[in-house]
Length: 244
Image 1 (cartoon, rainbow, N blue to C red):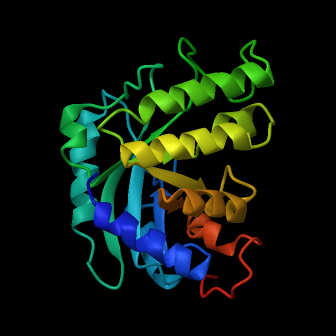
Image 2: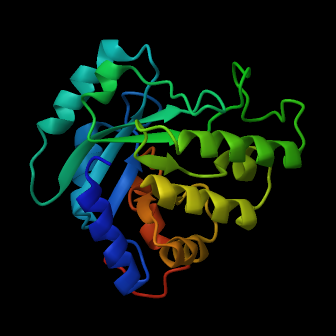
């Protein structure tokens, strides 16, 4: 895994402190569906005391026309007081774990997040529809897609596992299947993301990950300034935070 030492450090921090490290490895800007600029998101990250962030912009295989400009802007940011990494969030395409990711984009990234954003064959706006799938079917499909993705060497972080099940279909996190994903991530050396937007019980998910010895990534899924470090403000953490 690229940047494996970072994940080891933040996982060790979480084990010792039972809360997220001062990182946010999931944020979007006005390059895609975010409301604010790279500079704005970086400034907010410094303000709330984050030490490392990942700009995980949405991209497709066809996004080569703008991604180099995006990556260069991130690379030009100051290294202190907060280190900014270039990343991408791409969708899992099929049960074999193929990713919607161009090699040229991957070569510019420090880290790649792969997330289940839709099911095979779905097109267009889907988030407010069930696509004809039941909750049980959606849960099973998302599980199989995520398991396939964890075998893909291009993936560093499995983004918001079971996010579709939770947000689109109104289900809860299926803990028995989540444990299987965590076990698979442990075998393949991938990081499991704990995500502020999709995971309502981050403390429990953190415990499951720590008990299994899997690498962990912490992400706010921020699309605007006031969402930066949102995970750190979750009521699950009973330790006072510096983040505001």
